[in-house]
Length: 218
Image 1 (cartoon, rainbow, N blue to C red):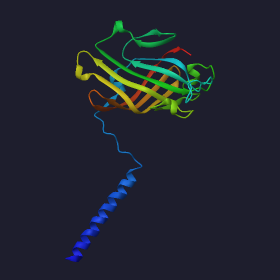
Image 2: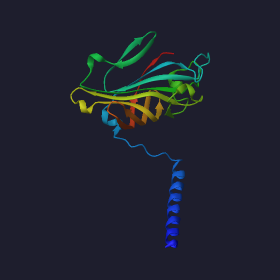
Image 3: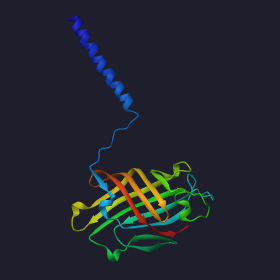
Image 4: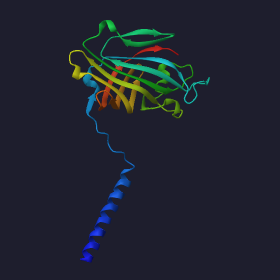
């Protein structure tokens, strides 16, 4: 009987040890986030793309006279776009006089390192390459110089005929891959999204090709 108890105790210790080792191994690989829905960008018939080259941006020092990045405000939409002015800057927004019953929009900011001082959007957005991967930045100011970043990304669908089909998501992590020769760009999305109101987690994926309208605001 005593030998049986010792054997059982040894077996329990072995199981606990194996579980501990498994947890240690898994620490290096975070668990996959469970999502409530996957959204394919091509399913939403986005036909317009525009960006405003908003400002020179200095990583870690907003008062520096020597900017390191350019901020591009980007909008992708199923609706017509129009130029609007805020202060001394021009931007793009929906043409509110021509909205359909189902409005789709993806909005985000790209931060691209300056490779040509006083250069155009075409010269700086991809930094002389034909493809760049922009990563989610919770705080662009505290990222290292040289990074290609995006921030403030949101995905929305306003469906006045079917409220259950409406969406309002904000990106919490992920990547936006930009490829092509400006202004003809291909964007590939892999974004983890959160809807605080509906308490849902989503993932926006897929590739879209558009010719972008541009405002040089620098």
